[in-house]
Image (tube, rainbow, N blue to C red):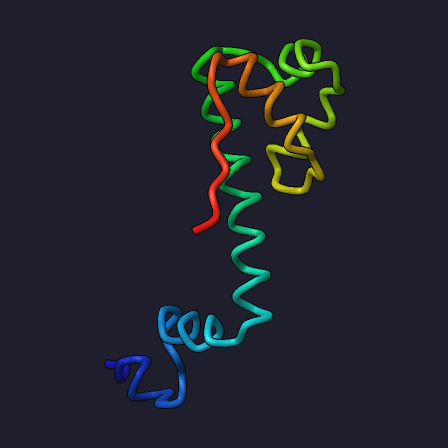
Length: 101
């Protein structure tokens, strides 16, 4: 029977330990938080759109953009404005709330 990984590789960090160590680095933390925000917005949009059984194309038509722009936002790769978020929110009868915490 093999030894547990921690005993075989004593210098190996767990994911949580590694993540905590990396988050102490300001540049890493800022980059992580920026990316997390983009992905949180993407997941919210996907969830809203699917609940309304709306395609990317039909959402795009409603807000005056392309289907590929919606796909980029939903993939976390889109570069969008607050104005675009406002149009999306209005389509779903929602408000956009932005806060600094």
